[in-house]
Image 1 (spheres, rainbow, N blue to C red):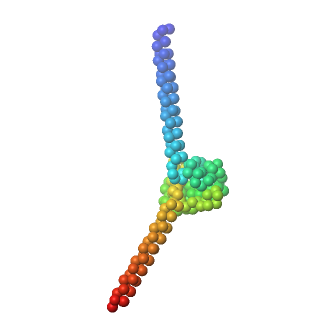
Image 2 (image 1 turned 120 degrees about the horizontal axis):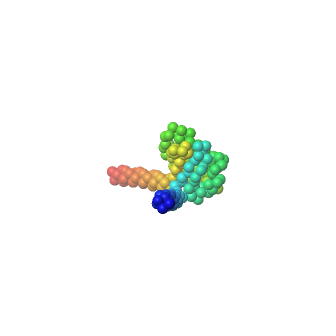
Image 3 (image 1 turned 60 degrees about the horizontal axis):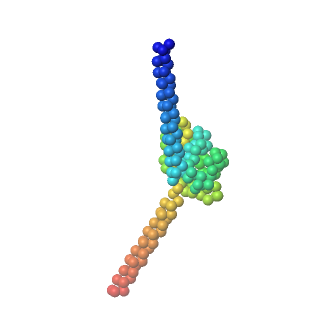
Length: 173
């Protein structure tokens, strides 16, 4: 009887070690999932994951805060169409061929009817879903407009200076 006790104790210890290892692995997976969720939610870009049919499975906080659409609302195809995402479904994103799409400019409609200019790209994921990443380019567009206006004003002032120099030379002669 005592001879059988040793293997039984060893088996119990092995089960306990396996259980402990499983619990540690599960705790680590939960920690990593929380970390990734925190990163996903706090990224200052719009991130959406669309299923094979093009419906959003996940959206980050930036989509909800800036665009005003709750994740549940975006799950309807009508909201996707209103947002301007209906054309990013996997076939259009070249997900069927495994290719990434390039960056392209779009105007997404906010829930309140205003629009947000974005630069977006899509990439197929291994499970057949599509990753959509978009940057709000409103500030960049304002900066580009201001720069263009400043350049036009500089050009105009240079023209006026040239005319003034020419007029002075003519008057001098």
